[in-house]
Structures are given as structure tokens and as C-alpha cells.
Length: 230
Image (tube, rainbow, N blue to C red; front, top):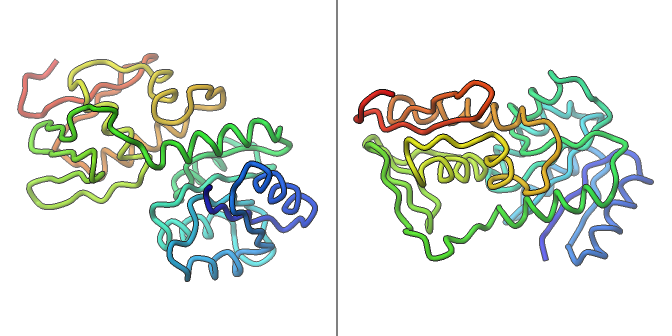
């Protein structure tokens, strides 16, 4: 059972989502505006997952995503909105959202996305080596920590999962489809812009500790900066 907060100003939509999530066994709560959602973050833990509508009456949805990410850094943020523009998707992801689902959506799709995100929010190592080393980086899979010579690198849950997937075999090309399947959802069929946004965030945070090479029309490859350039 996960704690899920539905942030939606339409009571009909909010009530239906809460009822659906409760049928699935989750502890779900409806918040009609941004202020009540931020109040939820005063408890610890705040929530495992937030469903966020961008069109709220009191707080801009993008600003709310930023504030929720700051207050609940380990929670999953899924945006639910009627906005379909590419720039809206990019801005939401850059503000901290993990996923973007446009209205109208099928409840079955939402259920699948929620289940996949919650499963990946608490990954296990499946007997794999708990520590990965790439260049000067040490990635502790069991503690979910990434350490560089200057100290710990603060990564969001999805950024950490993406780094691990690339670091399992440094120098190996990984397709966009495999990254979306392994890090997000094996049944993912939406836009993959979220992958590019998360790769950009990793590059900023990791600096010159490692290189993430873009493979045009294919995917990405993690490089050890101390090794030979391809």
C-alpha cells in the first residue's frame, strides 16, 4: 500500500481518482488546490506519489511541482493535465515531475503508470553487486547513494535509477527503448522527452566525473573519463 495524494481542482475527477486508487489498495487523499497539497508535506513521510493537475486555482502547477520536489524529494510526481504542448512537458519535467499524462486518459493507463513508478521507487538489487565504480564515482545500489571525490552527489530517484542502468556496463550503448523500459515502464508508449531531460540533469550534477555520450537516433552510452575516448 502506498500513500498517494491527488491534487485536482475538479471534485468529480479528484473523487474518481481517489476511489480508483483505494480500490487498488492505496491510501489516497484528495487536495483541491496547491495550498492543501503543500500542507500535506508538513507530515513525514509526506507521500509516496503525487498526482498533480497543472491548472490549479491558487498556485501555478509548475511552481507547485518545484515546491513539492523540494519538500518531498523522494516522492514520485506525475502530472495530469489537458496541456499537450511539448514545451509544457519539458517544463514540467524540469520542475521535478517524473511523468506527464495528458487528459483525457484511460484509468487503466494511469493505474499501470502508478504501479510502475511505485515499483521503481523502491528497487532491489536482485543479487547484483551492490557497488558500481565508474571513474571516480562510487554508486552504492543498496543505499542508493552516488559519491564523487568531492562528496555525495544528490540525485533524484529516477536520476539514480538511470545512472545505475548506464553504469552496469560502462562503454556499452543502451537504446532509448531499453532505458525507458528498464527505468520507467516496460509498457511505456508515450513521449521519451523525459529521458532527455533526466540525462541533461545527470550531466549537470555529475560534471566531468563521467561522460554520457548521445548516440544519434539510438540512445546513450556512459563513458569513463579516465579511459580512452571512442
